[in-house]
Image (cartoon, rainbow, N blue to C red):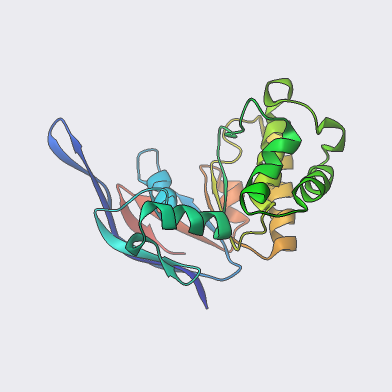
Amino acid sequence: MSAIIVEHLTKRVRDADGSLTILDDVSFEVGQGATVAVVGASGSGKSTLLGLMAGLDLPSEGRVLASGSSLFEMDEDARAAWRARHVGFVFQTFQLLPQMTALENVMLPLELAGDPQAAAKAQALLERVGLGARLGHYPRTLSGGEQQRVALARAFAPAPPLLFADEPTGSLDAATGERIIELLFELNREAGATLVLVTHDEGLAGRCDRRLTLKAGRLAGKG
């Protein structure tokens, strides 16, 4: 079965010359539990595609079916509620809330879902990623690798069936990035989630079941 179906996805934006096409008639499917790398040169539309697949942006044309829902037939409130139930997202720049501790950042999606065990689950996940001694630390006091581990714990906390990662090692040195990737794949295997990630790292792309190659906004390969 397909976890995600992308059909004729197109994204255009206005620019000084009139209109710029960022994605051009992109179609593919992702099977449940698959790991997929989206690769291509800078400016090829990778992050835009990921944002559309997660329902964070609206296309000019086309549709995305994910976890049984047609994302762009929903209004923004319905898409936000769908994301809360179905999506975990890991960003290159971590996107932790600076006024919250590591524990509070991981608790947040669980609390929004009304989970009465939010604190216990968040603590267990932080211990799982090796940050049991850093629960009360704020993001500014954590290293880049530690912040990304908090971000991984937060993404996996609500046990989403879909996980998206946009250059998850892009802000990290090579050794730290490798540790983060090991942890990402390990957590994903345990969760059985469908993982779609954007990367420039050929080694990381090679660890995925499949790669999608974008070239100037068009899908150049579905290997």
